[in-house]
Image (cartoon, rainbow, N blue to C red; front, side, top):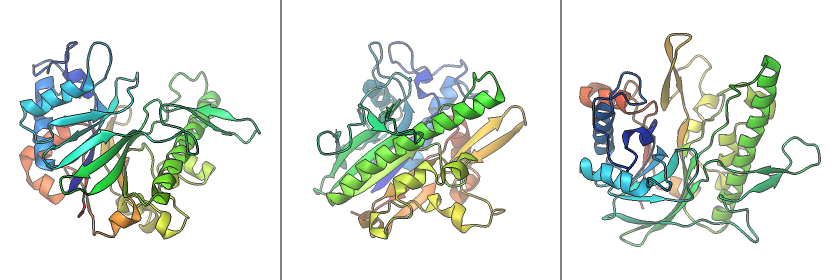
Length: 338
């Protein structure tokens, strides 16, 4: 079975107000890429990845005017994708939903949120936690509640998926550098608190002996920014259970490369952004698929579909260009044997 996570930059902009595809020559949110070009590129990428289930991060919005599920199922029908069914969980108001597109001939998927009495709170609720060690509990919420999925194969094998889009707001409107630093630290604390909340849910699944995959865009990782040194570890490491016993750790090999490699060695990356001020691209490893220990024992194979770093993607011009046009992130997949 192949599971993928893919952050599609402003997927919402490729649909009109009634949720119909905009395959025209108007510009998309991608620089110098038309909506028709981005849609065509996405069709190529989804077809090439050929996953049984794809977590779509930044899926089109779900509101009173437009619905995520019919939009993505319409997209799948347009390009003949086998991931022709779509599932979402708790909607949000950010125009960026978390959705799962999957092949119903291979698996069934159900939104199955956990939490409540005797457990960590449900992800559409709030967590009370002391963020700044002042003996006062703060209230933490998810702007994009994680998507909790109960997955079952046609042969009856079951596993749990938690799809995430963890985000820490940048201090764009800060009136001074000092204020920017203060706001950045406050937002980082909230991000780490969300990861603590997510780890609580991971522990509950491990305690229940359930096979688990946590995947999506963490906007975080070992060594990613200067705040990791301030707080001791990254949010990703908190969710993975770094420092705990091996039987309690979630694993993605890309989450540990920063510790093993020399500081001057090339690092894996799943996203590529253009820095206008510096007139060059910046790469970062933001997208992960973490597996519970029992799934790791099956010999999983991870892959980042990077247009330059993956040899097959690079040697396939149509796919290479499609990856560059489709999004500022690239798909990450894992192949597992159930």
